[in-house]
Amino acid sequence: MASKANLAKQQPSSGALAEVPEYLRKQNGEPRRGNENVAPDDVIVPRIALCQSNSFERKKSHAKYIDGLEEGDFFNTATKENYGKELRVVNVHYFKSRIRWQGEIGEGMLCRSQDGVTGVGEPGGKCATCEFAAFRNDEKDTRPGCTMFMNFPCLVIAKDGSVDLAGIAIISMKSIAIGTGKRWNTLVNIRNADRFAGVYKLSSVEDHRESGDSWQPHIENDGWVTKEQAQAGAQAYELIQSWRSAGRLKVEEEETVTV
Picture 1 (cartoon, rainbow, N blue to C red):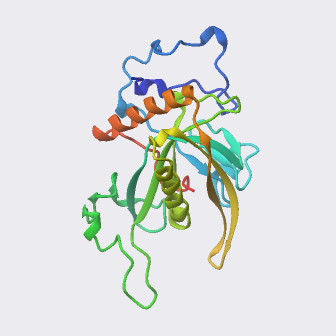
Picture 2: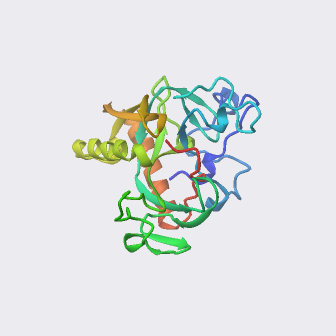
Picture 3: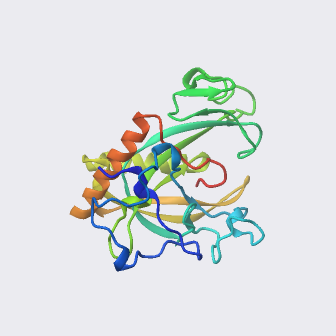
């Protein structure tokens, strides 16, 4: 099984990952020298985010700025790769998480649950019985005081059909996108196969509501994986499973990077 150290790749000055030159390429299973001391706790899994009008990645004065990124584009928060308004992925795993923020999303965490079951912080404890996890029974039907995320660890499929185990990234859905997340799980269940057996196409669509306009993800089936994609998907699944079992899955903070 591949090690977490395989997630480390060199990033060129442009911000996007380029294809590894042939003279630097490694064969499958060949060690990446220099990464011997990289432990699971030393790496954070990036996210695939959907650019909104207020995303930092659109602001030239911000350190997260990505040149050419437009509203509705999917992008990798670590490599800064811009996938455009459509991408194909192999979904290898699924889990929930929760965060209770001090105020608006991104303003500091009061409580966090890595598994959507048990929270750590204020108030902590079981999410199922927490007062902040449910809608309040009042005239306004006030929304929960913590945010629930549906997390989909994926491998992005390149234009030539290849997938890179080093490119594991998580697509997280919250709020309006929760319905899309449930639809994704439904499409997975319909297949009656391993989760990583299918290819899915994500596209961005405009959503107009009284609360404001935004870009939201749309998901649909896009066939079955190839033999090579299935092998990479199985490895990625085992990797994510081992990290979660050991409580070592570190995901980039759920702030403005979720869809």
